[in-house]
Length: 157
Image (cartoon, rainbow, N blue to C red):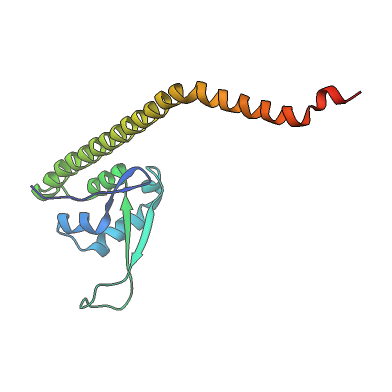
C-alpha cells in the first residue's frame, strides 16, 4: 500500500499537492498548473491553502517551491482531473482510506480529550462539594471578624 500522509490544519485533514503529484507519477508543476487553471472550481470545495517552502539543498532551481495543502474534496477533485489508469485508481482508493483514518484518528483524539476534561472537572466538582461547607463557613467567619471591631451598624444614627 502506498503510504499517504495528511496534516491536520485547523481540525481539517489536508494533503500536500507535491505528495499527490509524486503518487500520480506526474511533475508537481503540472499539478499546480491544473490547480491554478481550475482554481474557481477548487475553491467551491474550500479555500486553497497555498504555501511556499525553500527549495531543499542540492535541488536545481533557485526559487521557493509553491504548493497547496488540499482538503479531502479538493484532493479528490484533482484526481478526477487526471487520466484513469491503474495508478490513479489505486491512489483514489488509498486516498479514501487515508482520509477515513485521519477522520477516525481526529475523532478518537477529541473523545480522549473530552473524557480527560470531564474526568478533571468531575474531580474538581467532587472536591468542591467536599470543601464547599468549610469555605462558606470560613467566609462567614471572616465577615463576622470584620463586623466585630467596627460595629458600624449600631454606631450610625
